[in-house]
Length: 340
Image 1 (cartoon, rainbow, N blue to C red):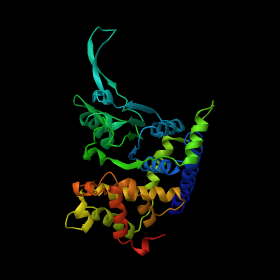
Image 2 (cartoon, rainbow, N blue to C red):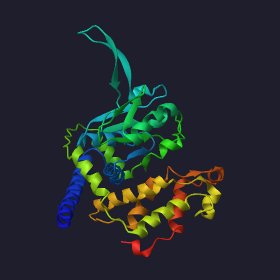
Image 3 (cartoon, rainbow, N blue to C red):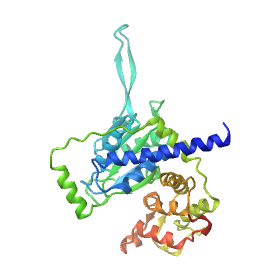
C-alpha cells in the first residue's frame, strides 16, 4: 500500500469513526439526557482500548448509561453487582468437578466467570473488599485470567466500565492505588440542571417504546484503536503532558510549592501516556488528525483526578484533587507551538 493510499484509508476511517460516534450519541439520547461530555469520555476510553470508572451518587443513571451503551455496541456484555460477600472466583470463574457421561470419569472443568466478555460492567465496584477488587487486575492489564495455575486468554476488545459511589458514603471500600491507576479515566457524573432533571422525570414516568439500533461492531473498535495510535503528536505536546504530570509530584524534580504542601503522591507516568492517547482520540472525534495542547488540557481532570493523593493538610483546608489539577493547568506553561 502506498503512502497516499494509507492516508486515504485513514481519512475514510476518521469519517467512519465520527459517523459512528454521532450514531452512538443519537441512540444514547433516546435514554440518557444531557450527559454528552460523560458519553464522549466513555467513547474515548473505548477508542483507546482502556478502562474507565464513573463516579457519582446513587440515582444519576451510571449503570443505565453503560447498559445502554452495551446494547448499542455489537459486543458481548456482562454485569457484576459488587457486594461485600462477593468472592474473586465469582468474577474470574472456577474449576468444578464434572463427570464424563461416556466414560464415567470425573475431571476438573473450568467454568468461565462474567469477566469473559467484551464489556464488563463492574457495578458499585467499591462496595466489595480489596481482595475481590484485585481479582480484576490481571484481566485489566494482561487480558487474561489465571486460575489454579492455568492461564485463559480473553477475547478482544475488552473493557471494564466500573461505577462507584463517593467514598464518603457508608459501606464503601476505597480502591487500592494499584487498581485505580489501571483506569484511564475517572469520569464524574453530577446532578443535572433543573430543566434537564424535569425532562428526565417527565420522560421516564410515562409508557415508552424505545428501540436501540446497534451501530458499532467489535471489529470497528479494533480499527479505531489502531487509528488512534497513528495520530501524530508534536514533541511540544508530549513534553507538555509529561511536564503536567511531573509537576503533580511533591518531590524535588519538577514539583511546585502547592504540590509539596498538599500532595502525598502525584500522578504516575501512565497518566502522561493516557493524556496523549486520550488526546489523540479526542482530536479524531473533532475531525483532526493531530493532537493539540487543548486536547491534553481538556482531559487532564478525568485522567489525573484519581491519580493524585492529597494529604491531611489539604483535607483540613478542603482542597480537592480538582483544585490541584486546576492550579497545575495554571502553573505549567503551555508551549505556544502546540496550541491549535
